[in-house]
Structure formats: C-alpha cells, structure tokens
Image 1 (tube, one colour):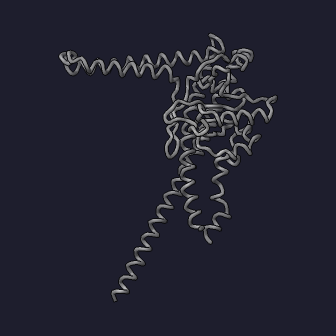
Image 2: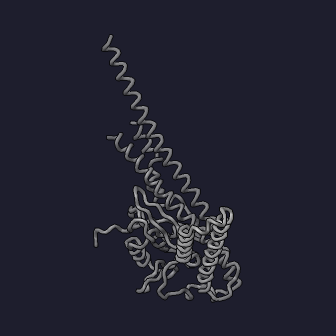
Image 3: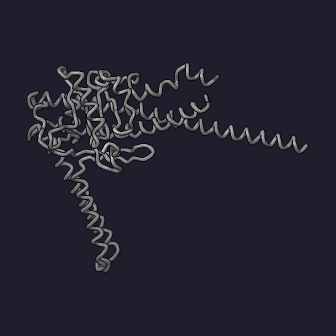
Amino acid sequence: MEVADHKTQSLENGQAAEEEVDEIENDNVLQFMDSMDAYLTLVHSLSSTLRQGWLDLASARHSMGAYRLNTALLDHTSHPAATSLLVDEGKEPHFTLCKWRSSGNEKLLLGEEQSSHDKSHPQLRHRGATLLSEEKTSFENKASCEIDDQVQKERSKSLSVFGTLVSPKLRAAQLSFETALETLVEIANTRSEMLRAFDKVNQKSGGSKD
Amino acid sequence: MANRAQIPNSNSALIAMIADEDTVVGFLLAGVGNVDLRRNTNYLIVDSKTTVKQIEDAFKEFTTREDIAVVLISQYIANMIRFLVDNYNKPVPAILEIPSKDHPYDPAHDSILSRVKYLFSAESVASGRR
C-alpha cells in the first residue's frame, strides 16, 4: 500500500515537472512570437515614415532645384555626429537614441548644477515653499526652452549645408527622418529581444531532440 | 588590442548607412553624419556607378569599426552582398535592412527573419513530433 502511494506520488511529481517545463517552453515561444510581431509592425511603420520623408525631399528638390539639394554640397570637413546612440551591453544590447546630443546634454548639466546650487543656499526657504516651487518650475521651464532653442539651432545648422533659405518641405523631411531614426532604434532593440527569445526556443528544441 | 570589446558599456556610438542618395541625405539632415580627422565618413552613398566590391568593403569596414553601433543598409543593396550579410551574426553593430524608394521592404529577404523562419517550416514541425 505504501509502495503504491509512493509510486503515485512520484508519478504526480513527474507530471507536475513536465507541465512546468511545457509552460516555460510555451512562454518562450509566446515571447518570440510577440517580439517578431512587434518587429514586423515597426518595420511597416518605418516604411511609411521613410516614404513621407522621401516625398518631402522630392518636393524640396522640386522647389529648391536639384543643384541645391545634392550630395556634392555635403560637408566633408571633420565634424562629429549630432545624433548618436548609447549602447548598453548586457545579456542583450540595448540602444538609446541621443538626438542633437551635444547641445542637450550641456544644458541638462547646467540645470542639475543650478538646482544643486539652490539646495545649498537655505535662505531661499525663508521666502516660503510656494515661491520656492514656483521658482523651481520657472527654472525648469527656462532650461527646457533653452534646450529647445539649442535643438532648433542644431537642426538649422544641419539644414544650412543646403543654403541659408531652405524649403519648408526640407524641414519637414528632416523631421520625418528624425522620426524614422526613433523607429529604427526601437527596431534594433526589438531585434535583440527577438534573437534572444529565438535562442531560448532553439535551445529547448535542440535539447529535446537530443 | 585584438581582444578589446567592440563597444565599451554605455558609450556613445554612431549609426552607419549604406543606402541610396535620398536615404543618406535624409538621415544626414537628422544629424547622423560623422566625418573624422582622416575624412572617413560613416556612410556610403550607393548609385549606379558603385561596385559590389565597394559595398562589400564598406560593409566590412562599418561592421569592424568600434565606434559604430548600428548599420543601416537598404535591402536591395543588402541583396547584392547577401552572403556577407547573412553570415554576419554579431549583436553589435546591429545590421538593419531598410526599404528604399524604388524597392519596398520584403520580409522574405530579411536576414534576421530568414534565420528564424525555419521554426515555421513543415520540416521543423514534423521533426518536433518525432
């Protein structure tokens, strides 16, 4: 009787373990399918954004003239990229887009220094909490306006390669391609997730074949 | 030198491009262009005069440079060097195939999707059932 109970219990434990393994495998497959679906959706979105960008470029070329919008005018002197990526390597690499980075970071640092300077001066507290929070909000607004101004300056600098006065369509094209860059970074991150999920699924199916 | 990791953690890196004129100009407007002191750029503009060898060399250069994290390549250009693109399997830089004006994106040719599509083939389903 005891032996029969023991056998039943071990059978149940075995079944539970198998069910758990199946659940993990199903989770891996679901994760892979989700990431592949996200990848395809993002690529479709990228196609639309790029199409808009090409259309705007064609319109700009039509209004400005082909001689004013061609690769012969590109700046070949040494200059760094204004838009770059931050890469965080780990189990899977993660990419973060930094648009018009040089100007934005400088202003952010300036903001942090200012707020830490305010904290070290207690006499501001005598003005009252409301005034202090209003000053902080107005400072933050001012900082964000300054960052926006700097970003606009960087954008104008990028456009100035093709002349001082450019078609509004060229500005629209610039915004389209900026959006396309954001989508591309999402695609790169989704690609990493998809490959990781694929490796998990592949590992499991390879292990079960053995 | 040879054993150094390709990109250090949390470091700034570039986006490289191998594409047609309009695509490259568009992304350059978005601030992606970089020219170093030796006048090396992070992009190659492909036109009717560009040879397959030039594209191969650019691909090899961009995938071995330490300061590049993503390589954008138009899918129709990737098809010209498909054997190189499909054999590339490092996580960084990531190779992203993008559509071009005259050649829409085809998922059947995407190297990442080709790598994973065998999971959905009849063979793999049948082998799983054995």
